[in-house]
Length: 265
Image (tube, rainbow, N blue to C red; front, side):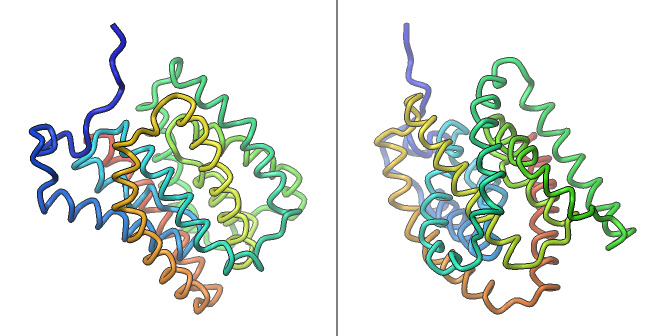
């Protein structure tokens, strides 16, 4: 018998009884939306890092994941007009082209690869990179000629997005190794992650994961995400190069820790 792959919103608690969400549930939904939007507005990536760890406390994964995708699209579109001057389509195109090929591969691999093992590998890679970078600093870098492989990084990020919603990890590490400045990095993060989120949304819509219940959750979360993302962009515009790079590395570190924590939820 065919069963729907969803539970009702806040299925772990009161909505199963038809009583509506409790105040703590609603507070956690809003908190995840605010923190996700703020980080996304600051850096152009990292929404899932901040939101998922909180939302998984009150939502099943089959709703928390799609809600992140919808919220990423909303936050990025809201910030796009102000970030647009930083977007260089020549830089972005190879990443997006690789990602468009990678996402379907990642989705196909879902039934063949252990997502748990994949997350462990990604988390270890992130934390190892940060440890090496903290020890050796700017001596850890790649020559400009390495940019010819941008499409491969986009492809890897696309596969990671299809497998576990981790599109931003590979481009972020790559941008750090190449020493890209603040405008270049932000333009690529924003446009690439928005493109991967739209592609993921279409896949989720085709698979039936975008439901009325999910859209009700999005109607609650999105306004808070949009406001906090707008504030995040305001802060981004006032950061210097060193501050922006520190924030990017901090968010990357949080992503590694968040992935590890998610393994136990």
